[in-house]
Structure formats: C-alpha cells, structure tokens
Length: 171
Image (cartoon, rainbow, N blue to C red):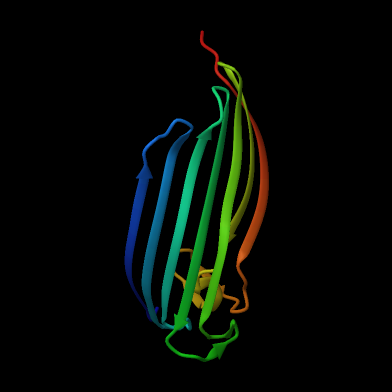
C-alpha cells in the first residue's frame, strides 16, 4: 500500500510514597517524562513529529475520623508537539503546539455503618490532542479507516460529579 511507520518512544516515571501518619495515608507523588519520535511515509500525509510530555501528580487520603475519609488528587500536564516541517494540508497548518492544564478530584467517603458507605466525588479532567488527531491525513491500516485530523483542535476539559452507595452483605 506504500506506507511506512516508525515510532521510537522513551518514558521515565518516578513515584514517591509517603509513610502513613495519624490522619494522612496513601500519599503518592509521581513525575513523568515521555518523548516520542513519530515518523511516517508513503501515502500518509502526516508530518514527522517529536512529542514531549511532562507531568506531575499527587494523591492523598486523609482520615478525619473512623467514619469519614477525604481524598484529593491534582495533576499537571505539559505536552509539546513539534512537526519536522512547517507546512499545511487539509487538516490545517503544521506548526509547533504546546498544551498544558490541570486535572483534579476531591472525594468523601462516609461510613454510615460497617456495612454501608456513602461516597461523593467531584472531578475535573484535562486531555491534550495527540499529534495524530491534529495532523493525520491518510489511511489507518489498523482500523481500515481514512483519517483526517484537525490542526486547530484545542485541549479537552470535562467536569463531573458522582454519588455512590456501597453495601456489603454476607450470607
């Protein structure tokens, strides 16, 4: 079919676990770095790109008392896409892109009794578009589709809330 794909990825991730205190537990901090050199050829019209992702996240549980637990998380992402050529096709203009944003969540879990718990969660998520979503124009062999990107896409953000009830029963 006349296509060529080459992907080289390098990923580094570190985790830091904090010891439990009187009220604090499950504290985790992580940092990550991801580099991807994406090269295509043939009938695909997507430019070669270098992608760099950086991130930092933290999660923490806090035991208020024997029946109430609070949890919080926060994550920062920075994503940079650098096309090898600054050109355009019908997806739009190939240019360097940088996206950065925060995701986070806050949750409460209240034990009404040993067998019943009520949970409430609020969250905000963030996701940057991939280089394929921005610049691809051509056949995608794995999905048997012809994909056309959109170089003017912006990052996605979503907000959510959740209420849960957890019950345990024994026979």
